[in-house]
Length: 303
Image (cartoon, rainbow, N blue to C red):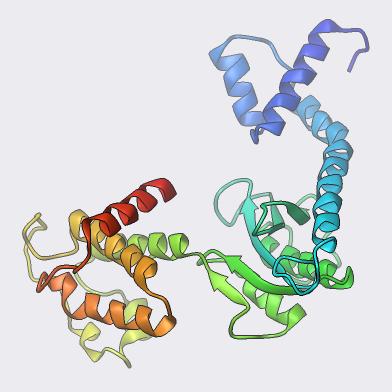
């Protein structure tokens, strides 16, 4: 980059703004060159900007982590949320959706405050000789970085007692590997569980019969899956199949179960009732209008 070049300075500032906002060169080039007709820095220059700002971004994140750790260490060790009774949440993100992303990141946050505690990043251009599972793509990124971040937490003396995660995260294996397997250490987010269940129902709604994978998984528990099939010739709102309204109702009912149940046994009982009666419209929820409106308000806020 040429010093004292006004155009380069403008290009650098715009590139930093796009990177900080979470956008790569593709969005940068499409917005400036194609949409606005502004000549901007090239792809190679854009990558130079990434290298230029990386140490500064890393220092900022490290400072944020150190501040949150100091705050937790100042809490009495017997209090939930302290350094010795940490409540965290963690997840990985691929910077391009799918398993063929060139890079990805993983973070651990304080669940009670939202403060950042540990973070890591993997890139397919990096040296991966020491990573048995990392073979040049970001496919194994989440598992590897989860191991590294939770090992770092333990090496610094932090004792993680509760971990909240989404339904498809593999970090539970790393938590149990580092801190030991306990039945009440890792919990799944209710919103993620309900959303994943709704997605599964949407996939089932497109099928006339169960797939070979589904039959193999469930035939021992439910032998009828081998012969079960959709009876209608063409889907409609009244055909009795998994319609959009049914799936929405199932998600609402599942959320109501979570809100009203006080124990795992209550939750299991409510879910069995849903399967045996509510999904067949045999009876309705016995709840007050105020409770129902509160549940619906919470659902809208989560969505």
